[in-house]
Length: 344
Image 1 (tube, rainbow, N blue to C red):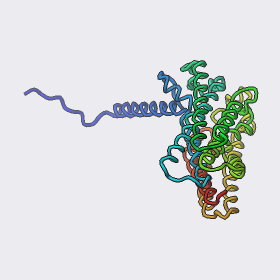
Image 2: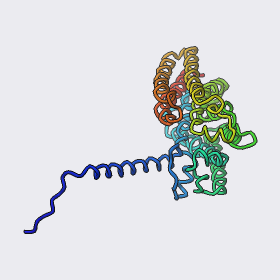
Image 3: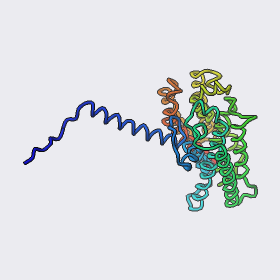
Image 4: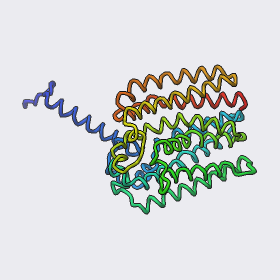
């Protein structure tokens, strides 16, 4: 019989280290590619699929709050019922608010931010050279036209005598344009730009969802614009990743104007204060249970602000958003349900 080669049951330490290192590298590469596709900070460059590059421009991670805003608006109308027709209407409105119009907003923002992204996020599609500027322009024009078509379809479906959803879409895309494009370029001012962003994420999709199932009124408009001041705080979080580029190009973001730590404090105060004031309004209309739930949802946000954001807003911005924002958006839905219940 020939002598068999023994199986090494105990690999050498350097082999274990090498294997572990390879696994970590593979995991990091997957995470970087996922971040790239979703349009998040910490992405990798090198994607060659034009469809994935176009999707990256649209930043799918940013669609979620606007899709949720439609749900909150449907709830605040007080008229939403679980029928197949209403589910299809709301799904089409989510398509409008998320992939189409938010996709348009993010694409045009990347186009006008190509110089600053070359400093802050060189892996983005335009500064990395993964897509041409002509292709980017054609993308945001197509998304804009598709969005207007879907908005008008929703107005016809809802039987609106005035095309409310289309008018809201036109207004929202105008705000998106002046937010990103010169000469106004609202994002050059930390207060105006972040409020425009916060209102776009909270008020605009809320109005669309409410108008689709009810009649949009001034109380809802004013209250959601007030709620958007909490959204201003959320928008400030996005400025910390761009401090160096903003400073070099003269953009007056809040971290540039006030410094990182002061801007972080302003950010969390805005987030907590205006949610608390909305809870106070719910008490004033005798929706005490919903007000109490909203306050309870603010508490974990304060906890994560102390744990992550205030300690290092630049390093922990993504971690903070992932942990705290679910409680903020749940609070929005609680508020929507309360308003619908009260018949506001």
